[in-house]
Image (tube, rainbow, N blue to C red; front, side, top):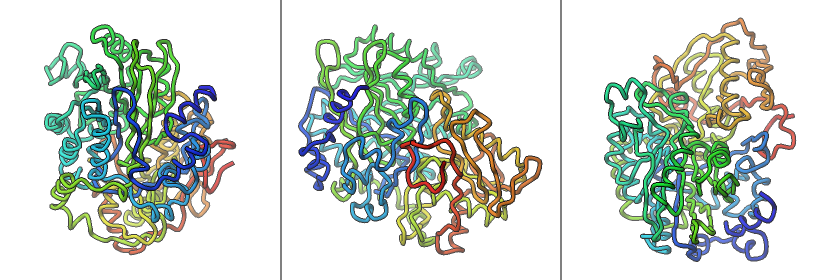
Length: 587
């Protein structure tokens, strides 16, 4: 993308430089922030990765989101001041707070919480009324049914009900598939919209034995695409579920289903849809991650728009990728209900002729709560309210997760595992979901569930050799920093407690991790055994209690949630990388 095109995108995103944009960056009222002239014939509204957060929350954006190769210093791998400078957002403004980790605790106290389905509902209805309901589509990128206590206890049904009330038209999935297959199908049956996923197929054995599928001839488990008449135009929405679900999450829950990026099959499907249906636009509703989506836009032609999810990137300016058929607009709408992406499309004689895009932060103190949605949320929370509101400890510092390496809440989880399990080392998954707690606030059971609530939460304490520990770190590091986006599985680096190491993301696979040592400085030896605590085993169920019970027990005992040491690795080879800021050690 050249500078002229980038400046044009800044302008249509509503955050370009200049006096008018400077005023826009400092807007503070509901009317000022959310008002915009309707444009074009069709409006696509997109949220993703809300992780079952029905109420407003605090959510800190990453201070480390490294990109390398073609992705280096390019969105979404810009953080802090570098991101604000590129997109022309005033430091200290509401938008700066929404987009970055900068001065997070102070800014959060000033600007309040974000998200909440009752507030999101108000914003969506405002945008529908503005453009005309018949001209709007609401798309959900997935990771909707998981991430809270109520979602866990209801097996995602609380979120199905909330999305029905929100008026979601089409969705795809990822963590949805961490419930059992029968539960997934039941939830989809109760969902008022359509669930689409072109890349989920039956296994050969399941197909032979007559397992349930949308299309027995092709093996598609779900509808691969849907057609919607929006603004008098036909829009084809193709679903792209998370490609690596059976690797990143337990396959035992969905034994008959296979996944994958399936770029070749996606190209064939796009070609067939264009030939058979003659749509005015083709939209890919993706849960593959921003880097994967950018590569898909290069190698698959005929897709007009990719609305992406999975990597939780709040992307205020869409990328425009040129390919064999023209161009593809690619964007990503953050997480935790914090943002709503709004893409207005104008059509000409041969498809999309122009567009306007806005990434709207959902500031809950600026948007009144929808009464019906509020009543529904209160109803689904009521049976578990006493458990959710139990006070466990007081936060001594900002507790957060999001970032390529250990966050402070991750460290609390690791410290809890070591203390309760009497272990030397703790390992915790690099999940990107999990809400933030401000210093001085109470850490309730609900906040612990936000960080740990999965369907395979069991803990373990076992002996591992130094060689095994290194292999685990190397494997996850390759998932995160593999130079080919199609081999990146999303998520962040496995969190560690009680040990430290050196990480060189640009090194070859198997050579990125070195200098492993315990907190006391003792080197970790390949042939020596260490007592390791962990949770969220993918291959088989671990024997211990759910991790939230371990963390709750620890917090009840210590009463003050604090950390003595943040086990972040020393980084090598990240000089001049704008995807890192406020990090304690790198060279």
